[in-house]
Amino acid sequence: MLALQHLIDGQWTPSESGATLEVHNPANGSLVGSAALGTRCDVQRALEAAQTAFQNWKNTTGDERSRLLKRAAQHVADRRDELARLLTSEHGKPLADALKEIDGAAGTLELPRFTHRLEGRASIGGWMHGGGQTTKECAVSHHSVLRHRGAGWSAQRCAQRNHR
Picture 1 (cartoon, rainbow, N blue to C red):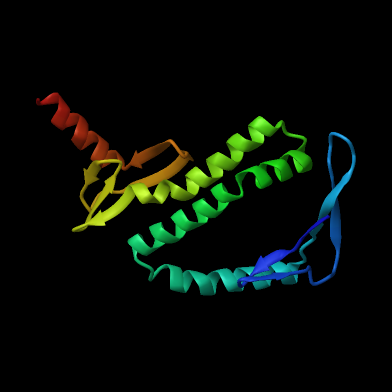
Picture 2 (picture 1 turned 120 degrees about the vertical axis):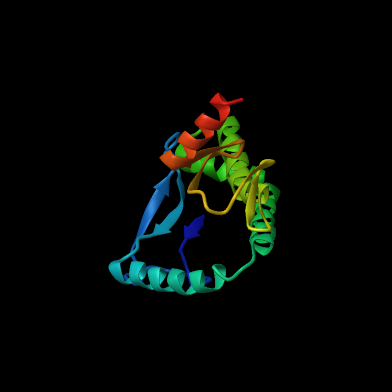
């Protein structure tokens, strides 16, 4: 039986209260495992650990972040069948759908490998833009990225296209 705990500051820990929630397979009602129910204290510890971890992460180079995320994606891919079976038993999801979801999760972890920093410019899937533009990238799936740009940039690009 699976007993899920909280991952806080790199350590698996039970809830401060010790409370858990039983997880049942919706298809047959069998007990799959249990999950720790967090308290305010658990959340506070997790937030503090995340803030500390961010201080190190923000100083990590893009190349190193990409390597770490690619390694995480490989771990998910290596456990693909096991994770899909677990997802199926927890949610009653068909195995084929669970496999697609696991593949999507691994692909999302690999998405940052398409973003590189080169001389103050970001290369996203072969498209280059300069450093002064406002760009938010929202991952939609592991196959595509939507780019939202400030109105000034969009107007400038439209004007350039109209003069060609």
